[in-house]
Image (cartoon, rainbow, N blue to C red; front, side):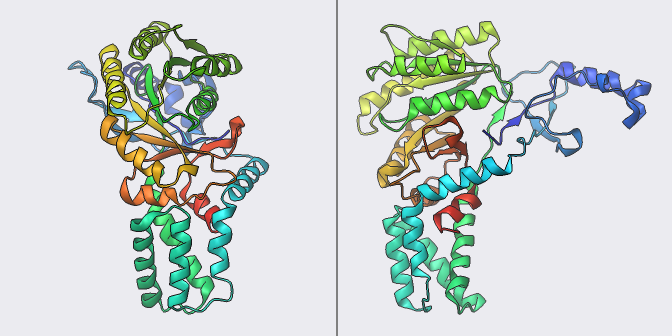
Length: 385
């Protein structure tokens, strides 16, 4: 599985080691320096040094001593280059999953004239794809302006214009997950029952392990029957410890898990929280309590608050995003079940009304079926390109 994670570098110890290395003859010799001169352990996701793009980032959550440097160096570690066969397999599954929408959109542009009938058919297709009224109106109005300004006269040209508009709309949803900025990095994962939350946690755990991250899972979903057992199965598959209790308060379970992660030096803690319907306010209040307890267990946590949504639920998924974002302040989404009956247009609705970043999309049950979201790939699958 291939991911677009980023890793934070530049701890004080590393900076000191690098400063000392820079003063040695080997460091000054540049390419002639021996391989053992780098004190950092290589990551399986790491790219060659010349491919990295260092940037600067502040660390407001830590109070650095006066002698420390206030600005840390951050190495952007690109993902490993995917194998061509694996990439094509993933794109084929994505295209197959969105075939229902792509077939209706593609058929509109076959031997079509650029007139009001074309726009009406396109409006219907976009609404049927769960794009929603606001995103549909935005796309159509912008498309009309583009057709006029660029004097497009052929249907394929209009389709290409629509493709670019969709990419521009969805592009802000692309975001990479930054690793290493806290230890443990605490991820609170929410979602309504049936969205594929626990399964996504298991897949993501495997994802993180391939980036040399130690993982601990917290079975905080004490609300749904067999949720703890389901998470335990994923823990066994990935050889990951699951912190759980036979019964009890989910906040207490996750509090214990944070303490355990700190004591064991775990890189990432993923907390499975109970499925909640956003219309049940008392349950949402309990979820807010869980977040507060995590903050008490570790200053600055949770560092990521993710919501898992089922792409098949249409506009209800957008309502979930709004409700959970208002309650918890979401940092990212995992969109599941983009296979078979999924329409896909819901991401356009989210991008237009509540642009929470989409970290991952899923098209099946296998571990490799969970992949980072890419706006261009998604748009091409949506339009059948």
